[in-house]
Amino acid sequence: MGIEITGWGKCTPSAVLTNSDLESILDTDDEWITTRTGVKQRRIAEAPLSEIGTIAAKHALAAADKDPNEIDAVMMATCTPEFLIPSTASRVQMNIGNNTAAAFDFNSACSGFVYGLTTAYSMIHSGIFNNVLLVGGEKVSYFLDWTARDTAVLFGDGAGAVLIEKTNTDSKLHSSKMTCDPFLGEALMLKNFGTSMEIKDPKEGYFFGISFEGQEIFKNAVKTMARLAEEALEESGLSVDDIDLCIPHQANRRILEATAKRCNFPMEKMIINLDQYGNTSAGSIPIALTEALDEGKVKPNSKILFLAFGGGLTGAAAVIDWGGRSHALKTSNEQLPDSGKTALELVQDILNMYQ
Image (cartoon, rainbow, N blue to C red; front, side, top):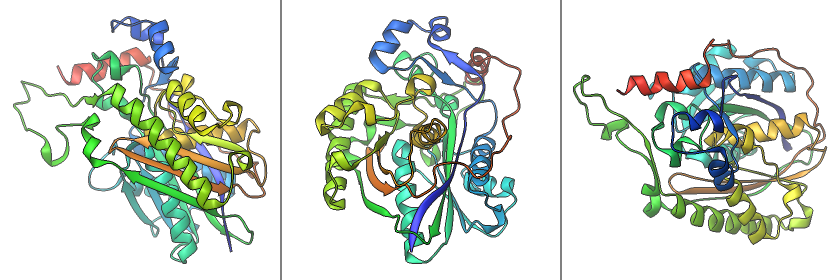
């Protein structure tokens, strides 16, 4: 028995927020943002997260030519769920027309997709499921303090999805390493949410706002991703030279360059698209994977290293065999409806909610 990713898809909202746009609402400029992060623009969503995830899921199902009713489980990696109850995964399940699969969310922040990939492969390997639809996506814009330039410039909205199936091949998950350092959890935290939320008079307003300690994140991201990459390669019996592509979480270009240098990993093998989308947290790796496939960068039987780091502070690395097919069997025309608003107008709508 083998296990392969047989379908893939993404959904990135059409409203583009450029660095120049941010200059009009923040004390910043394109040069400051680009040199520190590598981000040139990001997407802002008006649609609910479940709709964004559904579009990505439908593209993944089309790429695999899979009937939604054959799906055994829908898993959603997100730290910005649409609801606490029911799960966002169950809304995606409903939207694709499946009413029998298992459905659940999990929150490992930016590492969520790799955590989910490992979980899906393991469940299929154990015989619990034959196939899993894994969606990673976020609507981070809703939770950002758009007056704080250290966080407002980093994040964007979007989702990606993959279909993982049991196959009659030798493809497999070679190794996976996952970790969390809870003692550094406050370095990246969304406070005043969940049961810690302070209920206030609506007239007073309240704001979530992601707290972010940039230097602590940078230092630990590089150290953790490099260590996990080395451990995953050692466990799989592979070397850096055996890896055809590395698809990392798209957090910050300087973090990715420092990680590659520490691992002696060539940058030309690393997929980077954060200049176009910013940090979409759990959505970043499946979006980057989908674009790499669309651009012909993923070849049949490639060995791929996934790397991630995120709030918690979590980290993850996984090495997989790609499988024998890197082209979509079918395509989907599904896309989000145009909101009719610019990205700046959508950001202003968010600001107005908390004033």
